[in-house]
Length: 152
Image (cartoon, rainbow, N blue to C red; front, side, top):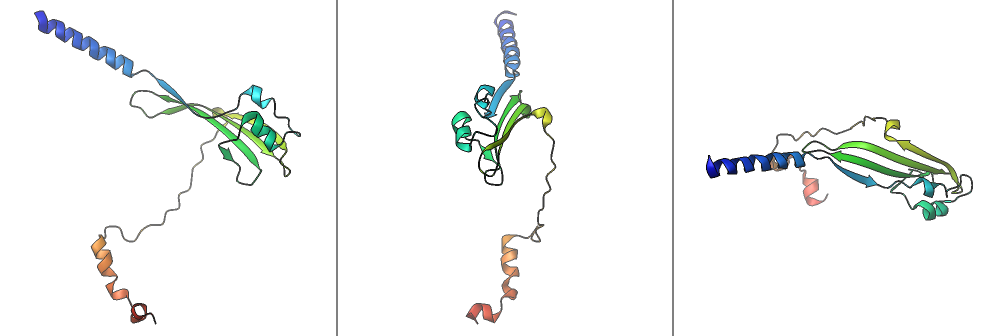
């Protein structure tokens, strides 16, 4: 049993230790959400967009209409082994403005407030599936008129 047995035991122990360590969850944060202390500096009905930018910073996304709102989004993802990452927390702070750029409302939403939205994909089907480049090129030879060639 000598050296081979001891080497085998060490190898199995190292393999088990490596497998145990590789299955440790890793958490990563994405985005930015202002702290509550910073949001307290924003006064509804008084603060302007410039005041908000100075207190909490500029957002990564804004509303579709100019001046309609600023959105701060932060997410926390859990990576575990070879599995797909899972979003375990999401915070969204929405600050809406009126026509004059004054704060109308400050709202905070969590992952539990979200809804899954099914996106509609409108994809135009291609009529050239299965046709190679050469076939497409040669297929257009008979479709050229004399006017197109001579510029008439």
